Amino acid sequence: MDKSQDTAQFVAPPWVEEGSTFWFPVQSSTVAPQVDWLFHFILGTSTVFFLLIVGLMIWFTVQYRRRPGAPLLESPHHSTALELTWSIIPAMLLIPMFFWGFIGYVEMRTPPEDSGDNEIRVTAKRWAWLFTYPQFDGFASDTLYVEEGKPFKLTMISEDVLHSLFIPAFRVKQDVVPGRYATTWFIPTRPGEYTLFCAEYCGKSHSDMLAKVVVYPAGERAEKLTRVIEIEEKETPPLERGLKLYNRRGCAQCHTTDGTAKVGPSFKGTFGTQQKLADGSTITVDDNYIRESILEPNAKVRGGYRAQMPSFKGQLKDSQIEDLILFIKSLNEDKK
Image 1 (cartoon, rainbow, N blue to C red):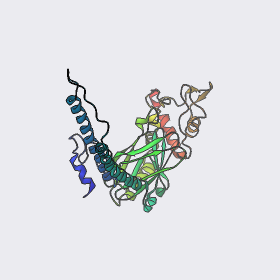
Image 2 (image 1 turned 30 degrees about the vertical axis):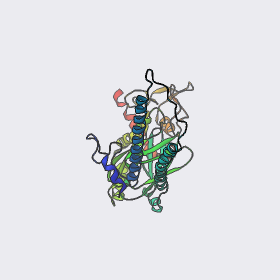
Image 3 (image 1 turned 120 degrees about the horizontal axis):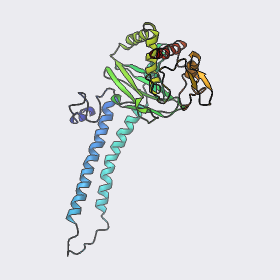
């Protein structure tokens, strides 16, 4: 019997997506049914024993409570049969739990050989995800583009602190540790759009560290992703490209466009102004300062803010930096 069929009894409430269970979103990868089945088995077993133990505890408490005038009864000291029972039965349940969990873990940690053909490089930093596609001339995006029915391997690294890549619909979760590469893989089974989270608290804007996962139907990824690249790099006006970079490369998590200070200073009305630095000196916010701040963010830190911005050196082309500068300049128009 297909293990996934066992989860059918956990019917989702009416306010969640059709096909979801009470605990999980719709199964959208090959490992999802196995993860769900094991979770529900452990949950069901734990629930049965919780009710049994608590029920017996309440019954014994009431049945053998002390009554006025009743003599004290001597408690039994040892029962071999009872001790064997409460040792063997849990062991018989724990062994298959471990076995199924171990088999699933090994499967999730061992990517198939052909997954290397679809490797995607992932960079995590506060507070954004960057996905680089070697098969598409190093195209980089904040969206993860994959395809139904094919294995995809993610090779990940963090530029600052511990992060954790988590795609609930795929039942995939892997910590991303600074200083070393981590890998995970999956085979999507349903075309559509899903949300990717950071599941490890990584700072003030941790909850904003989201990304979109797009699963194309089988055989359509190459054509559609090529079209995405054409639109983003050739057909989009520079100012609009700058706005997209601001939102996609994590700038929006720290720098607002409405004048409100966040983790970093706001971009609104800042171009061309004189600003004090943390060391007491003063600089002019011009093209060179913005470029230097993008590539060497800790070289000249604005006064009142901490030096915690990651470097984008090697991640942004000169043309992209120019698009960002153009976007920041455009935020001065409200001051005129």
